[in-house]
Image (tube, rainbow, N blue to C red; front, side, top):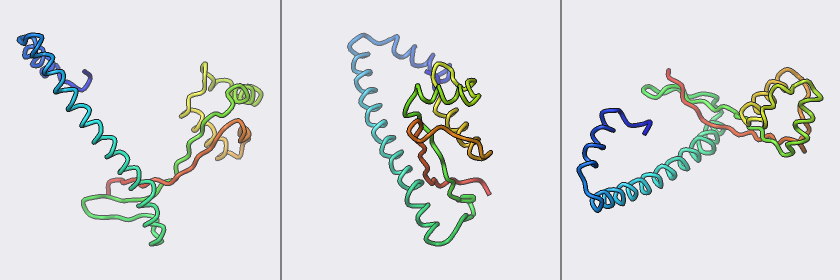
Length: 148
């Protein structure tokens, strides 16, 4: 309901409140069918976006020797390298973090975003990181657009 305005909620409650159970069931079935269809479209759109942004555009820019491309009405297109870090061995990771003075990032578990930021900062500062049998580091290129 977070995406509905108070006005829309009031409108729907009024509309549905005037319906009998059979009409509510019909409305529910139709809304569910629409939701499933839109979700499928959203999933396909996301997959197409990922393919274009992670493979096609980075390859095309590399082939043309470009690091950025600017177009009127679009902005500046560039390729960023993204890094993702995940834990492979939770106990070993906790032990390493504690032994190396970083127990503060353990909050019952270690958040994936926090772990990624931590490892990136450690690498940037030339500091040690956990062994690769404790964490997994993935790197990928992704196209991004910034306004011109």
